[in-house]
Image 1 (tube, helix red, strand yellow):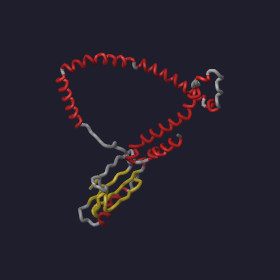
Image 2 (cartoon, helix red, strand yellow):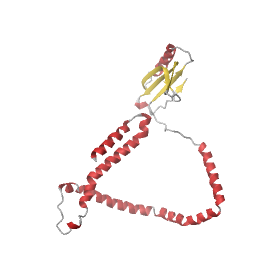
Image 3 (cartoon, helix red, strand yellow):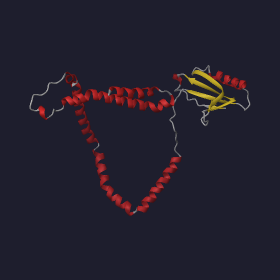
Image 4 (cartoon, one colour):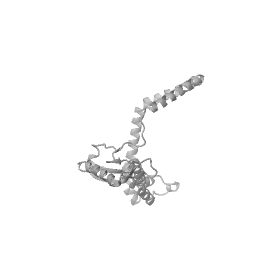
Length: 239
């Protein structure tokens, strides 16, 4: 059990330290899976033996003297006391929540009593109900078009890039000179940690290979200091 638990943790926990967009997407999942499995192992090694030792014996144990408690049972006795305290606290919280949610329970009961009456009325005016449902669906689709949507949330990666596209046929030396001047314009900024450029290709999301090549293309990548990432929100631009 311990080996299988640690194996699963060894698979999921390192995923929490991945950086970038992938890290933002899977970090919570990695923490959740790892902590839940470790907690399950802890409970199975501590609380479950305590509950077993506190449970009643079989039918044959009633005739004789009770079996002496083992050393492990005495060592796990504090966990049993904590469990009993938690059970008492759970009972008290449940009683308080029952009082707090009493109005909601009464409202649900009233809705449950009114549901058969509303159902009979809806069946009697079925065409009107269907027309209202269709109208609501049309209105919902119209409102959906006015709402913004995005595949991934906006995150601060602390870097941006400038893509340079000169007229086709430009020499590689001219493209490298333009990229060098763009890099020199930002490398002395106090917020910039690193500047590097590549000449002859640049990133392109609509390309099958992820990049496009050409002697007239270049890309300058700028990485910011960690302390300056929250103050600035640079965006990529292309010229």
